[in-house]
Image (tube, rainbow, N blue to C red):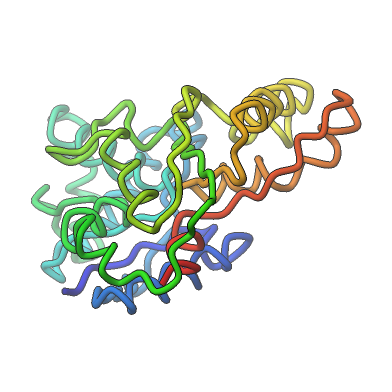
Length: 263
C-alpha cells in the first residue's frame, strides 16, 4: 500500500535518522511512502500565534496538493501531524477562514475539499499491518528489554487519534517486537517542546521529570513517536545530569528505530 509522505522540515534535518528508520521499516512491512512533491513548512506550532491566516494557508497548500494524489497523508512529526489536522478542522468549521484560504489556493491553481485523511505512521502500522502482522515479521525479538512508551502532547490532543485508536492501543507495538511494556504514567506529559532552547530552566525541568521517572520504572529505554521529543529527551541528558545531580542517562529511540532493530 502507498501513502503520501509529508516529512516536514525536521525529517530532512535534525531528524534524518528518524526518516531513515521510517523508510526502512515501512519497506520491510510492505508499505510504500511517496514524498509529497514541493511540500512546504506546515508552520509548526508557533506560526498560528503570529499570523493565523498565513499559517492555515501553509497547511492548506500541503493538504490540497496531497488531496490531488488521492492517498492518505502520513506525518511522522507530531507537530506537523497536529497542525495539518488543525488546518482541516478549522477550514471545515469556520466559513470566513475557508473563504480566504480557498481564494489563496485558487490563485495558485489549487483546490481543497477536506477529504484527505491525516495519519501518524504508527497508526498506519497498527491498522494496516496489525500487531500479529508486525510480530510475524520480527527476526530478533527484543527479549528482556524493558521499554517505556512516550507519546508527548500533540499526538492525541487537541485532536483524537483515528477511530479505534488510543495511546493504550499504541502500546501494543512494544510487546509485538518482543520487549516488556513498562507502564509509564507520564506517557502524554509535555517534554517542553521548544522551551529547552528558549526558557531553558523550564524546558530542562520538564525533561528531567520524564527521564527521572523512566529510570525509576527501571526502563532500559524510553521510546518516542515525535522527533522533537526525541531530541529534547536525548540531547540534554548530560546537562540535566549536572543540574540535578541524578544519573538520568537512558537511550531514547524513535519508534521505528526500535521496530527496525527487531526486524
